[in-house]
Length: 68
Image 1 (cartoon, rainbow, N blue to C red):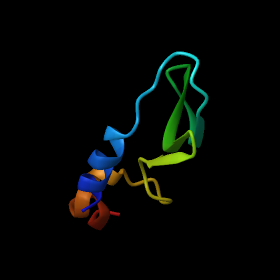
Image 2 (image 1 turned 180 degrees about the vertical axis):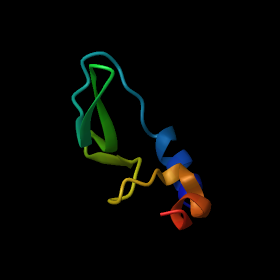
Image 3 (image 1 turned 135 degrees about the horizontal axis):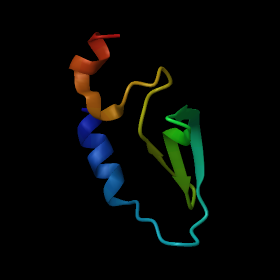
Image 4 (image 1 turned 120 degrees about the vertical axis):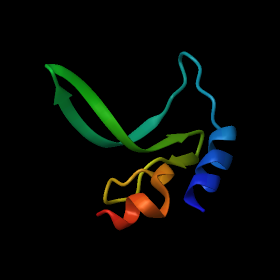
């Protein structure tokens, strides 16, 4: 169910240089390089949810959710 919704939501999203977006997630550093692990991205008032509040990817399906 989540994978289907994520796939459908991604069809509505495209990014171009200069777009204004808001990203909610966690900042991490790995090997001295900073990264943002995005939980959700908002563009033009539309939200693309990538992970749930516990950090589990939406594409993990039920198997990924049981492992936590």
